[in-house]
Image (cartoon, rainbow, N blue to C red):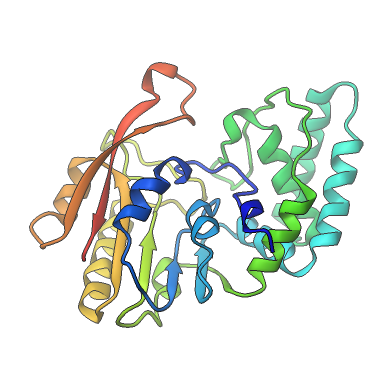
Length: 277
């Protein structure tokens, strides 16, 4: 496997590609099993390529895509190729037709290789690569005018080879960490706490509210007591400091660019990396 090809196959809000150097320099030198309960686009796991790993996300469509690429990469690539080569001259109309079809399959619970291909296609052809759903759980991001191919065949095959060696889960973050033990490394990159306390949004219709952040902080404490190496990233906000300050954890503030924001003036910010070792 050419591990240089194992990079995220989708763009994801809060993706950690730009923070990889800061994350890697703070990681434990040695650890047993790797856990990532909020895998998202997978920037960290695809950079580290741990040999014994569990990845998880609550976004069922996202995890279906991981599973289809793992188990049926050729069928997935055939579907992607059909979507890319079948694009109409009117790309905008084609995108909205495929988005509607994707949402229809989503509502019917048709989690198959076609849905996975549609998931990647709309991610690569939607505005800012932002995965966002409305209150009904329907994807609603507009077209970005791109006609570029949705993925790289060699990269998908390399990712598939790697995913076959690890465990892929779908569900709540606590369940994903249930078996974590002393010496394991748990990387926690949950949906971000809002910069404004009044605005809670998430990329799944289930949402990730203040109570979820409190539950995550409690899990972080429990994992620490188990002897796990824990690292968490989030916005540098008052809420996060309320949950993690004064517990003996290291909290480093780092500057980031928020490329997902449509307003260029708001594409700078500060995040924290919190670790217990």
